Image 1 (cartoon, rainbow, N blue to C red):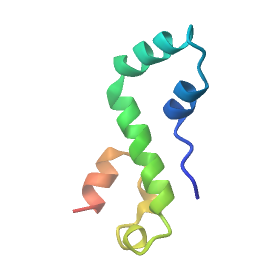
Image 2: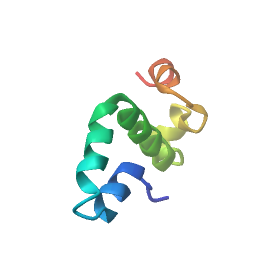
Image 3: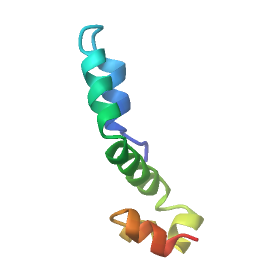
Image 4: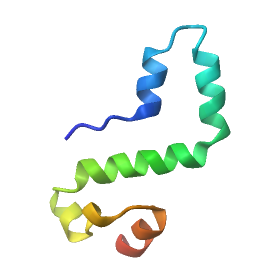
Length: 70
C-alpha cells in the first residue's frame, strides 16, 4: 500500500499562485498534518510484522498509538 499524503499531493500539484496559500494553511495546523502523516504511516505498516504486533490496524488516533506502541 502506498501512502497518499494529502499535503504532499497538494504542494506538488499547486500552481505558483496556490502554493503560498497551501503552505500558510498547512503551517497554521501542523498538529493535524502530523496526525494525518502518522495515520498514513500506520496504514502503510499495518500488514508488517511490527504493525501486526502493535495492532496498527486498530489505531485510530494519537492516544491509541501511545497506548499500543512502546
